[in-house]
Length: 330
Image (cartoon, rainbow, N blue to C red):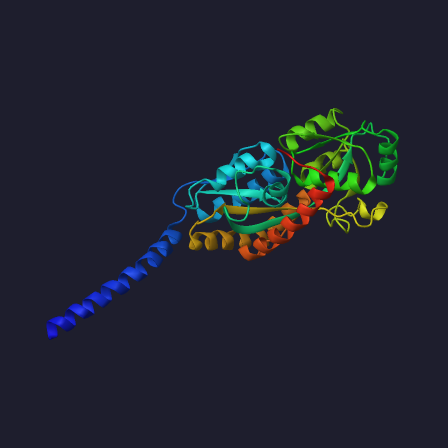
């Protein structure tokens, strides 16, 4: 009888150990994470807002966690190439990405074929920043405000070209929304990111753009480009001298860009939590707030659910905007 009792007890202990083992292993893995460099995919070229923010956050993650967080620019197809690459990477925490309103809210409606699902294929890490877009023109464009620009566009239908960082980017949809609301005929010229687009704009090869404020701000400050209006409902805190598009005759016009970090779906929850906590602490630091402000961005942070909730709302919002604009990419 004693031997039977002992065997039963040992079996119960073994079963309990097996149940606890996966959780214990996962926790230990998260505590050791990272023990090698982490790849931070940016689905656009260097020099744009996505790249700027990714490098700021990656540098601080490197300092805090003692391993290199290395930015890997994988541009193309409106951010889809780098985003799909991340979605199909190992879910071990060693490949993460900086996504955008385009890659994770707009493209699912804009592209007829998408190689990833922005919701099912990703684990949200943190909402990084909210950013205004800004309507900027080459100095050769005579318009000094939005109303003058609308009048100019209507007097020259199909003659004004606007560059964007790519199909499906917030700059693209900001312009499509502007076209729909103003009844203007403007020609879209997509690029592979803000860097090459701004080079052509500065050279006068395109006449204007709706770009993320951090990318355009240095050129606005230098006088190389003229800002006509920001796309947010209220004036942006870091550029209070630039009026909104809304206050210049289009009261319902609003398009705010956002940037967020993601890991592939099925990344261990303990690693997601660890990265979220580290990123949140970085975004709350006075140093990072100052750096973001200098770039024209507002840090956000919060739990992964904050980002998940925002995505749900934004996917629905931009699906309607894409449908109204008639924009569609095969």
